[in-house]
Amino acid sequence: MHATTTLRRAAVWGLVLTLSACATPTKPIYQWGGYQSALYNYLKGNVSDPGAQIQQLEAQAQRTLEAGAATPPGLHGHLALLYSKVGDDANALRHLEAERKLFPESAAYIDFLLKRAAKPASKS
Image (spheres, helix red, strand yellow):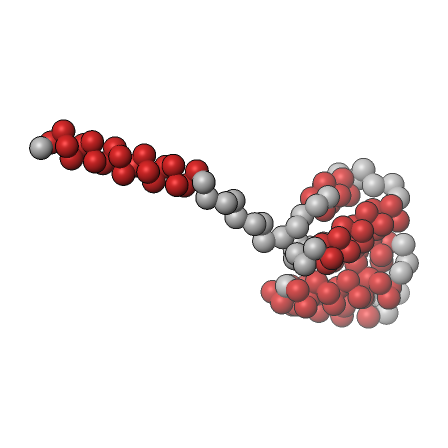
């Protein structure tokens, strides 16, 4: 009787493992594309032309939108930073608003950034 129970357990585990191997992989929540490497390169100081990175990330955001997928957290915030570096405040604001809309938990920080940007520069 003991050998029969052990054999049944082995058969059940074999079936479970076989069925789990056939399971489809879960779809990622966000479509990261090249965002992680772009951010890494920026933070390491390897970006000499913010305009090229803007084009790369804008293209990724467009592909993500067309695929019906979600952009990763921070992508629009990083685009806002890049646009502010090249002096395009309108697009910087547009991307900050997009980041706040997609990730409401970022609202307090984005509001802080917007208030700070709205203050006139203090004279020293």
